[in-house]
Length: 639
Image 1 (cartoon, rainbow, N blue to C red):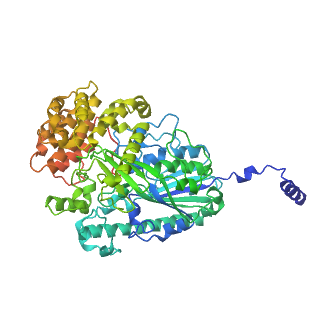
Image 2 (spheres, rainbow, N blue to C red; image 1 turned 180 degrees about the horizontal axis):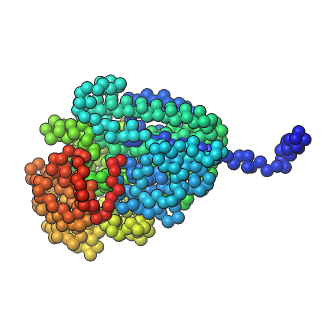
Image 3 (cartoon, rainbow, N blue to C red; image 1 turned 45 degrees about the horizontal axis):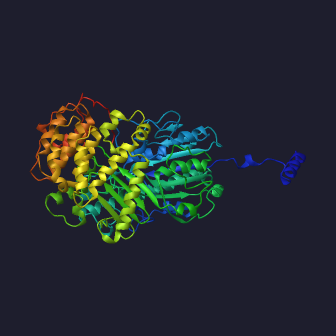
């Protein structure tokens, strides 16, 4: 035995033995995910946030990412981006509470399945919330009991993801009795409200209440680290802590400003795998990373090849460096439908600037969404607006949005000062406008077709559909950009009136979208738009009603009510009802409707939510027995 050992040592010393297999051990990776919180609620990232000693301890032994972003401001879209490594508008997963699950791009699995194929034990505890078809073989275990401790043997590397709802939006759905009787640990008088929030006792209490929730999240992080240490795994395991998108006070979750997408991210680097992150442990990383990069990063740490079908780029592991990561200065974000509330917004962060492009600027951010308005602060904010008690930044939540927003996120962290019309920033505006167009065309972005059209024509293979329609999508982007001028030029007039007469219904659709975005500037061509109220394509009729209603040339509710009552498609009904509520709530008494006006054929959760709101039914309503199912059944649970 002694002689054998001596022989082995001799061989090793002269380099005759292949020792590569001794370095083959792969790291474990754990994701600890808190729901619905942006950087603004942790002092490690933003002044006035909660103290979080356990999260800060992770950072001390790893890296803090000061510019980490969710690509979408809501759960299902953000989590699908995480799982797929793909941008939602390219693969058809951009709508929250999908009417139809998108297939994964050809040849691609969700990244935990790729880890599993490489020998990892993969567990999820337990939220998924995907807008894409998961496929087989992704998780070894996904449940409330899933844990790395169930792996087949101690030498099996693992990837474990756990999500925590203690910080979810729903935690702020407390009642008035709680507000009046339950004292928060955090003093409401001490909180730093966002510049766009009204300064009321309820808003201060809600903010303080949420900071207390973040302290619970920090305790969970500490407990998870303790379990890894107890199992002797801590120094073999990369630990990612991050928020699953922004939130959670009003005007955060669901919106593309930093409050909706700028998330906290720290990564603890284990002692035994420091060679995968050779520089900068304990530092703050200034480079930009986003959710589309997270899956590729995990694959890279595990030594698994990142598929070319993924859009993201690793920021840790072999082939990366902090110098390179710190040179990254751009992220892309997207917002579409959130439950029953439609909007279409895209954004580019580049350096200290954020550019936000609204394709439906006539829709106020404060347009009703039943789930959001369960929050008493949302309800109070709307009541203050109704009573005429708002001014300054808090008032803008209930007004039409600018088509373009440009914000200096360093000087103006709550993004209330729009620089888009400031002559000093026209160079930055033009640069980011062009960069966004380039990004949208390169995907190409499927949301340039309405959701109802995609459900009918694209969802068998959204990626292929996008490739086939790339030139057409580019033409829609150019048509939409006619709205960016200060007036209706003769050139724009000719192009829009020509588009209204196109044989392509989606070209007619974008003629109306652009006119609605322009509002009164497009009034000189309102007469040409009137025939589109009878267009054979239902969604074109919706957009024509929006345009002509916004400029008060017709009563839009006549067209919209007829659509709701005659369409067999619940997506069309939902799109029409989005406009119905816009005109009912934001045009005084000009366009009233009642619940009795509606006798829909198409039904479903989104249609019900809108009609219950019109009827004044508290949310969530009691379930009705034997209610009919929608034509295109949506997977609908609140995120």
